[in-house]
Image 1: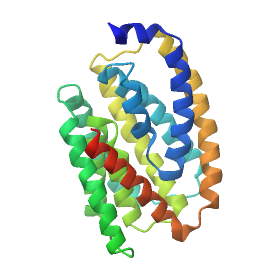
Image 2: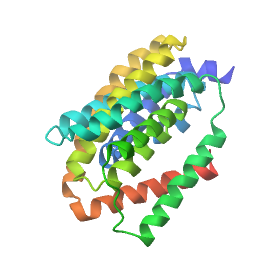
Image 3: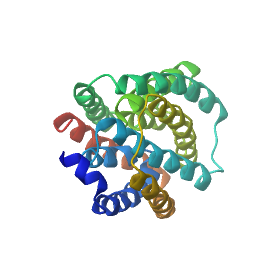
Length: 250
């Protein structure tokens, strides 16, 4: 009953608006993070299916803003080999999200992220060759996790893309465009599975989307001030924070 009352209370709209703004700044800087910040908090107000749909829409627009703001960075080979498997597995993951609990999976993702960051500290020059196989595995994994949890997909995508050693503009554009396509597939699956939002939340989405664009513009300004040689370290820091959160607070 508490969740039903909160849906009709105007205060969650204010909270979600601020949340959309702040998470968009973080998501633009890192290439992931909108769902990471929003999902746990939105779950205080909504059931998981509605949470995944609402945050998925905000995340989808966040991806669109990255494509628009970093439109001069593009790597077609990675886009194709990463994006196509991600679309397919994103649909499957979204279907499973409506059927399975995600706590164990969140802990598993968290352990992977923490282990990866520790590995980077030991081998800071590590790079992964941008082969079709590596891109396909990365895209398939990120699509599956993103569809299932709304959280892990962007982080796994960041692990693979930063390991390719891409310049920050290409990394953020590629991450945004791939996420844009994958998110579209999972949002469609949620909707086809019968998930709907209340009218006031649908109206609130207009405000959330607008504020996410403002946040993305601020995020781009911050990205422009981060030296390329330090950018991977910034991504690693946020991956570590996310990993700890997912492992200890799934």
